[in-house]
Image (cartoon, rainbow, N blue to C red; front, top):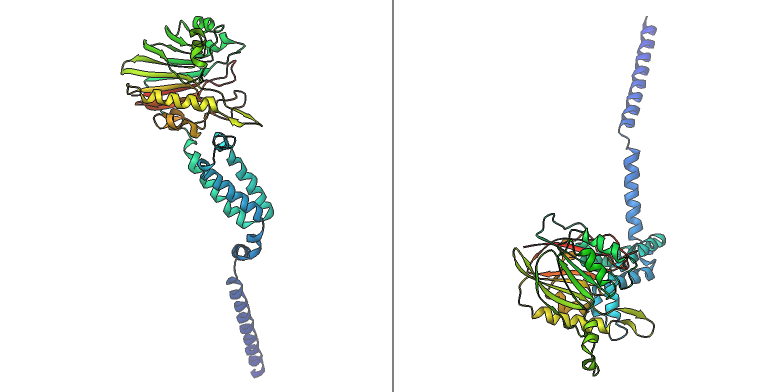
Length: 375
């Protein structure tokens, strides 16, 4: 009996030992770490180690320098001198497109695994957003008191009839045309007469209106200067007129409307960015607007330049762009098949910009522009 009990006790002891061992093993298994958490922590530690190593900051120094130069170029574009080939004005004309260099440099920085280049790219990104971020998104308002439109119809437009009909269907109350040739003028007058009972033409610019017009006069934008300018006959001088001013009678009172087509800007190897006549025209137009006595003013036309160009300071100091204030995006207008710059402008003073947009392409190499304004 005693031996049996002893054996049973031994078996109990053995069972207890086994149970204790099992329990201990189970407890240890329950307290083990989650492999996913360990992997995440290891990844963070690895990223910190990689980021604090000198190698990623030493790689891609050329890319880093280019990123910093790009940012400084955009921030200090107004400091680029115009003394040599009007480089400052040329840079300001295409300034938004320099943002395309950012993804190119970013791809290079990632390929080189250069931490310094990635950080340096923050400068051009911030600079671009500071200059053009306000143009992103739709800032228009649905309601307006008056719709105005402008179009450089192109002197050699192959389809002036179709162009006139497209413009007549735009819904604009006031329509400005530039590059109206003597041959095409009767076509525009005929096709637009039903929609716009009022119109005036001076030289190569004209204004068609649903509202009464008065006090129309040409604006001297110094198109022809020099000792022989005053010797030209009247007919020759009239043909050179490329700006007019008239008064539109609205329900809210008189509105001074200017229509202008400034001189061309051209790029060539010898002179660089040639803008002599355009800059002279812009200065003269700015003086004419400064002398305007009517509080409410609208300028419509092909200015052959972007408003970031320093040449238009005399105008932009008095008027503001409807596209900048109430447009959607950049509103590029030229060339019509693939617009890359906005040189057709609508600017205002004394009225509130409500909306701005481009109209469908016509037979011209410019897109028409339209805007809604309110009082």
